[in-house]
Image (cartoon, rainbow, N blue to C red; front, side, top):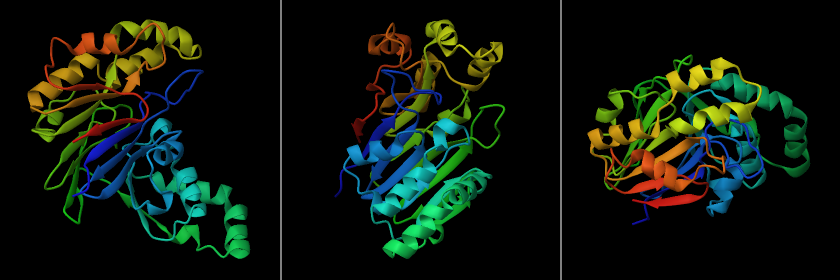
Length: 285
């Protein structure tokens, strides 16, 4: 049987990158031989290749919500996979409106796509992608893999989803971006791994200063739309999951804070195996 694992390709919360920072959100789930890409923030293509994935093998992608740090590189990933030999269908699941992004990307690359079809004999990229609108409930079932979704609390967006991936041998839950919600406890009940977004509470004022061009609205957004690390730990404990991974870290690039700070933030609320996310981290299931 194939190894079951999750690779955290990009673990930074938010779209900005700075010298020394990690990359925005993207993940690779390998479950019972099936490879699933979850979110496509900046850097996803390089991250997949660094994990040894052949981009031409892309077949299934999930986008949790339409914030740029979760889908900015979807188009470039698919185009690059196409130039790397992709010739089979790719199913992409995401919120309503993702098709508008895709059509805009195709329009921006029309000249290149048509040139490569004519000059290099490639199949038409526009025929290879099927976008499906995701909603809460059972999203899809394929080859023993069952994927379901619930809406999270991430205002002002409404179509923002946590995702559950379950096979006969593994169960992984991805929180997406969310404030703490009780529904996630039942949704993740007994999972082998919960990947949960996390903020470090005492680091937020310094982050505001480094951002430089945000108003008090940015702080208000963080507080109403995201989860402190200690609250992520509470959710994991209440859900009875086996492992907890903190990702979409806010902040992830402040040298004044490191792995020990995250461990201390959850210590009073979580006793199980803890993974503090960093780009390229591979978690075995």
